[in-house]
Length: 518
Image 1 (cartoon, rainbow, N blue to C red):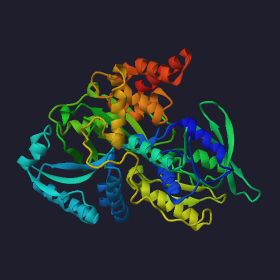
Image 2: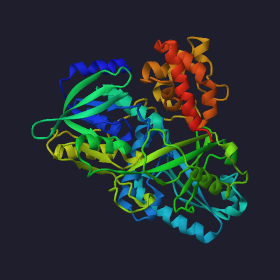
Image 3: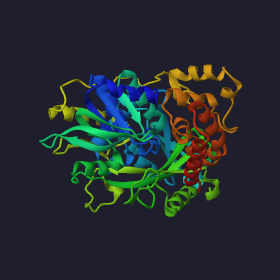
Image 4: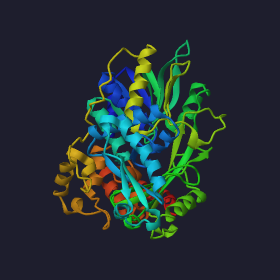
């Protein structure tokens, strides 16, 4: 997927069937749904694919144990089934993960065991494994690093885990492979309407060249997530505005929980659950749920959020993590489909998605979560068909094998996320000593992966490569800072950057990476 080739596609279509604004989980899912139904499809993302919320999740594919406790059975049932579909369709990016709830008494274990057994039953044939009651000794063996007094008993259950940014990229490449036009760094600047006030197209701006173009479409879909209010303003409709909450994650070395099982703390002082999950050989701990008023692509953690996660986590661990142990802090914003005037804690706002159509025929998909992205997309296009914006066509994504599909992936393999294309990286590494060399001595990423990101994955900036094509910024912000200059120089040579552009790229990335450090 080369960006210049995508831009050239714009000249070959006079009127698109569907234009999607937003390149996160929702927009990418809609793009793949559209193109596989046979609609001409254009997606425009103002930044990079999954730049916002969709690369900053807790890396879980789950039905939502918390939603089960809230009695939201329909959401849990749908998510459990979609979880299984996604793991089946992208086994190189998604897998099952064991979670253990520590209990300081047997009655508590029985209580959670009953609830999670119901969780398993709701999954039916799509269950990832049996819920098990663990005696104290077994719980201690399975959760090495957790205080023994916290493990009088335990409950083990199974959910899914994935790499969100890599899945987003695989969806973009799947849609592109099927014929969709997938553009990053292209912003929608205006909505065009006919005399009846119905949307007929979009003005778009290439953010890298500042060139502008008008594109026409039968159907325009707003999949901008937390930025949906900006597009609503262009549409002149504020009745569909969303609210947002912020969730932060801390990344540590695995020594604090040196096990393959994940920890789930079912009830924190703020009424949420807290996870500690093995991810890319690190330990990811989160998350929070803080209402916020200011929307940005790079939200900043609040000190009280950092303290909350540290204090909660250290109550369970033998080794006590401190702020100095934090390798990276990343923050995501959740778009919640609720009216701004609604006086309700964001943790209680439903994660169920909402699909609506404004008087101008702008189609909105709001809320939801990564696990249900496919079903959200299906229902969005079905709604557009129902309203006469598109000709009827059946959804074909339920059994669609996502780009790079390869069965039996080994998640300890450094190239697992590339699936069937891992061998292409290996071929590049054999071409030169430079391409085979590591970008950082402590991490398995090579310059061949950087080159692949540029040539095949539409990476345009140093951040695109170090944050989302490979996940170094999210895993170890200082390591990302350490390699920024050299990786930037490599990209400058490949992309023909002038010296001033290289300096600006490195400067921008270093300023960004500082926000990921404590």
